[in-house]
Image (cartoon, rainbow, N blue to C red; front, top):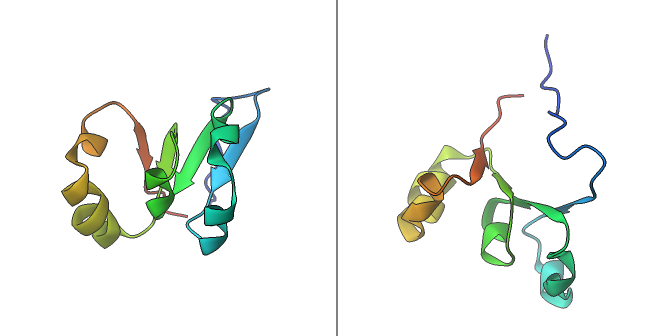
Length: 83
């Protein structure tokens, strides 16, 4: 079995991963602006991000892409990795 290896595109930089949990409502997300941000699923709605990770194609086509068609065309990094 082979595993996906994280590319070192931000080597030496601090990165933040934003999940979609309710606890994010209690966090001042302005603090993450200075870092590279990986948004998971709906977390892309909460802060500026550099990469959006998702595993559910239905989420992408029914939620994210439907409401924000620019996500598929603006050069942002959208990742749906097979692991």
